[in-house]
Amino acid sequence: MPSFSIGVDLGGTNLRIAAVSPEGELLEKISVASNLSLGPDQVIAQMCDDIQHLCAKYRDAAKFLGVGVGVPGIVDVDAGVMQKAANLPGWEDYPARAEIEQRLRGCAVFEKKEPRVILENDARAAGLGEQWIGAARGVANVAMLTLGTGIGGCIILNGKIWRGRNGLAGEFGHLTVEPDGIPCGCGNRGCSERYASASALVRMAREAIAGGAAPALAQAAASQPEFGAKEICQLALQGDEPSRRIFSSFGRYLGILLADLVNILNFEIFVIGGGVASAWEAFSPKMLAELATRSIVYATAAHHPGLPKEERERGAGEGKTVITRAVLGGDAGLYGAARLGQITG
Ligand SMILES: [Zn+2]
Image: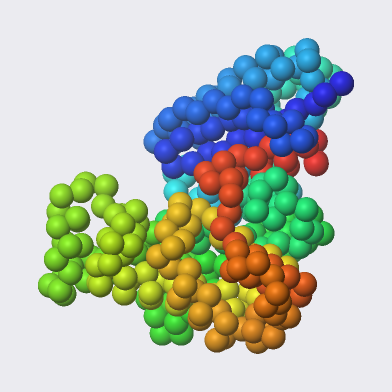
């Protein structure tokens, strides 16, 4: 009998729920507004309605495996609780997993079994998704950086999320790249996510506009209410010098961060995802140059000039460190959450 799990991705805008097979086939996806202002009770009620709807639809044809839920914040996976939830008001210390399990208890799909739900940080889930069926498919040891409002991180060791003692392993966004730099919400200064995230791009653009020497950025900011990473990237790719400088700085700091990660982990592949990864053309040349300068591990890895050009650019080859873009886009966390429901359910 075929089987399936449910993955849930709770984002700032959308709540998405998907039924996914163990082969990574998407059976069905539901997307609704996340309505975070209503608080966790309401959000979880909506989530569980949709989970039950999908379970009821597929349970006759396929065996149900479990539920994985990706959330933006620091998660105590064992307790099923968010310890820090800056973007989810009311979720800190709220017993999210217990609430979800309680609501699913009446769901016929669980029959006499206790519902099994895994709550996980969304960037960790995204890393697992990319390692399962994305850019790092088939690779046992992988690190992923998710570039969004901040920087999320994930370390996969032997095909499993490496959580560390307290579930905090992989907080790449809070590695210091500038010792006396900009203060960060975590209490440190100069964290990488203050310099290489969507919010960092907007900060640099606003500073350039305030300096009076960035007319194209000023015009874009004044005319586009949604002004952000995408607009700055478009200008950079069109050759606007202030925008190019912003992405050069972004790429430099990302390269500094990557150099540390490559030196520490010496993994075969590092995946870069999240919304800002779509600006790859704008930041990756500087990022890779910085990485080559700063990482002895990256620079001394075997070089294979005989490989086809595309393979060389991808960094492929025995011993070479591969730095590559994520391929699942915004669905990486949803697939990863579904995978969690399969391997632990
Ligand atoms: Zn920080």
